[in-house]
Image (cartoon, rainbow, N blue to C red; front, top):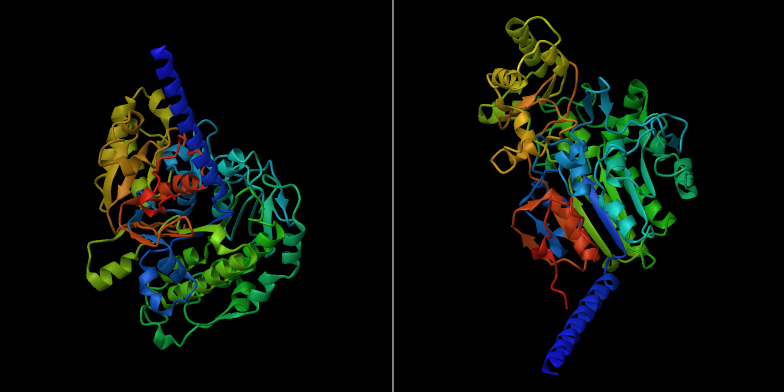
Length: 549
C-alpha cells in the first residue's frame, strides 16, 4: 500500500510539473511578438553608430541605443565578408559549410560549369516583363527563420522580404516565404519570382504604378547638411575615391545624367534614394498584407543595400558614406514610426544588424598610417601557378576555376596522370603560400577529415562546403585585399557587425559578451516560444532577454 501511495504522489507531482510547463509555454506564445522585423544593413560598420551619432534622429538608430539592447561584440565569423554568404548565414543560423552559399558563383565538377547561387530558369519574373526575376533560393541547403515561422505555425504566419539586391532578398526569404521583392534594374519596378508567388499583389502593382524609381531619377543627391558639418569624414572629392562608375566623384550628383549614360535604374542602388524606395515599399507591404494583426506571428526582413555600393564607390570614410547613413537613419525612423502607427511597437520585435561589414581601403591604410598592407592579384597568382604545374607535372589544364579565395583543380587530369592527389594538393597549397599577402593556403582534404574543425582554423573551415568548395582554400593577411584587372569584387576582412534589439522582450542593455551572427535565429525563436532546429549553430542570447514573470 505504501508503494502505491508513493507512486501516486510521484505521478501527481509530475503531472503538476508538466501542467506548469505547458501553462508556461502557453503564456510565452500568448505574449510573443505579433511581428518580427529584421533590418539588414549591408556592409555596415558598427562604429558608424558612434561616429555619426551626434547627427542621428531621436527615433532612428538612437531608438535602439536608448531603449533596446546593443551587442557591441558581435561578429560574422568568416575569413572573407560577402553579403551573399553573410545573408544566408544570418537568416539560417548556420555558416556556408552547412547552408552551402559559399559565393555568388561556384564551379560544379560533375556538370563542368559555373553555378549561380540564385539563377533558376524554372521560374518566371512576377511584376515585370524582364528576366530579372528568374531566381530562387533552391540552392540554399538549410531553412531560414522565415521557413521555421511557416512550418511551426502550420503555414499561418506571413513571411515577406524586401530589398534592392536579388541575393539579399531571395536568400533572406528562404524556401516558403509568401513574397520576396527587389528592384528590377531594367524597369525600375519592384519585382518577385514565381518561386515565391504566382500573382503580383494589387498593393505592389499600385506601388509600381506610382513610378517611384523615375521620380528619384529626376532628383539630385546633395548633402543633408552643409559640407563643413561633416567633420567625421574626408572632404568631398577625396583622392582615394573611385566615384560612381569610376567617373562621378563630388556633390551634387545629377541622377538623371548618370541614368542617361548608364542606361538603367541600377544607379538607385548606389545612392540613398534606393533606401527611400525600400522603406516606402516595406510600409506599403505591412499595410497591404495586414501584417501583425492576428494571433499568428509574422516576419518581415528589410534589406538596405545602398551602403554596399557607397562603400565600393567612395569608401567608409567618405562624405558620401556619412550622408548615406544620416539619410538611412531617417529611413529607419520613418519605418519604425510607421510600424508603431499601424501595429504598435509594443507588439513588435525589431532586430537591426548586417550581413557583413566593410574594411578600409589599402590606399587609406598605406598612405595615412604606413601599414604593411597591399593587394593580392589572383589572376597573376594563378597564371604563375599554371606555369609551375606545367613545369612540374607536364603540360595540361590543371586549373578548372578560381576565385579570390579558392582554387578548383582538374581532378580528372590528376587521376589520368596517376599523380597522388594529396601530394598534388599539398604542392599547390605550398606554392600559393609563397605569395605576399597570403596568410595561409590549405588543401581541403584536411577539412574533409575534420582536422581543423576545433583548431585555430575553425573560421576558414566554416567557409568550406564539401560539395561546392574548391580544392585549395586560402586566407589573406589582415588588411590585404584581392584585386582583378577587370572584375570588381566585394571584399572585407572586418568581422565585426552591428547587432541591435528593440522590443518589450529584450532588456535595455549593453551586451559585451561575444555574440555571433548565428545567434540571431535561435534568440528570435526562443522569444517566439518556437523550437530551435538542431542545425542552428548559434546560442540563445539569454543575457539580453527580460526575466520572465
